[in-house]
Image 1: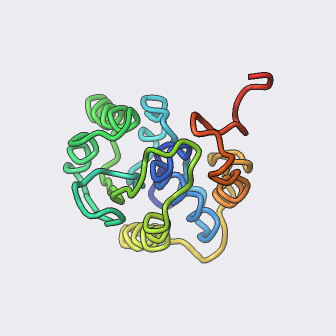
Image 2 (image 1 turned 45 degrees about the vertical axis):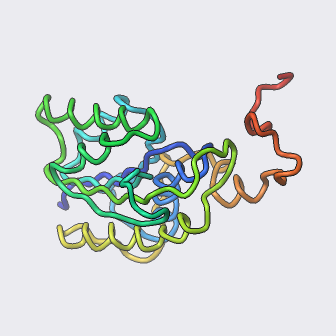
Length: 202
């Protein structure tokens, strides 16, 4: 039986390039077929709620938007013990602090995955509530997914071209095509939020 793997995308799709990690796992699930030993998960901004998933995994790939201090759109790979440091060095949002805590807690409890890889991209834009990925960020998704595929394959976890059915991604209404394609134009979009997701009567 193969090793248990967790492929995790974290971030917030409501804030432009903050959604990079979530869009990576979405693309991966749509294009690659993995066995049942591999969990593909939209971790969003769940923080410590992700601990049970780390407990089950022997290896883990994390996709995220990370401020590396590099040119916007630059992708950088970090592995092993360096991952928590990079995720907490310069925080862009609360989810990074939360995930840094997740890794630290998992290590303290003795069930952190043996091997971890972070595939991060330097965001182009974050201050656009309701906005989608910028072109330079979105263009990195196929390469990021290929890096994850190769890294996992080197550890005996292989994918076929196809699709992985998983209940652990965002609702269909939040997929990138729908979320970005159905967004109102900037001329009429509500800049204090995305009114498609306001409570009724707000």
